[in-house]
Length: 191
Ligand code: AMP
Image 1 (tube, helix red, strand yellow):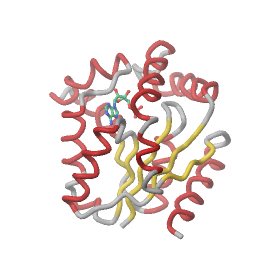
Image 2 (cartoon, rainbow, N blue to C red):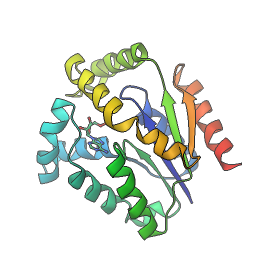
Image 3 (tube, rainbow, N blue to C red):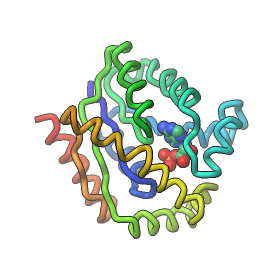
């Protein structure tokens, strides 16, 4: 069982790297952003709840997000391991995750923090805006997402550092280069 959390600012390439690593390890990548987007596409109640927050670049309320993750982590396919991409996003979510995992007999084994300077994040976002037309990939909304990350998400790196779980990976480079660093980081943490 390998429990992995991906941390990193919006635009750092978390989703791409999470998909590559999850495939390599044969574990599910659980992206809260992707689950919200698919609910919005399908017009579900959850999608309707999340849509306004997402379009403004704000975090969806914890109560909504936590129960969605709790349900996902109750599936059988996480028993072999899981990779969380985009959750937790603040300290309350991190604490809630600790309780959920304890209840299910699961653990976090490594937190991969992908790091890149702001100009690289913005360049990635602009590239993705051209490819995927995400509603929140506009300069204004992206600025808000970055601010949310700095205010609420960045502090959880020290929560996990205190538990000696964090491996920081340089996110500047090709997808393949970063993927190799991520894999090395996971191996390093397992030693
Ligand atoms: P992402 O795909 O991870 O960039 O997430 C896109 C958007 O989904 C975020 O800007 C938030 O509005 C929402 N979201 C994703 N994950 C979370 C989370 N853990 N907590 C609250 N909102 C989230």
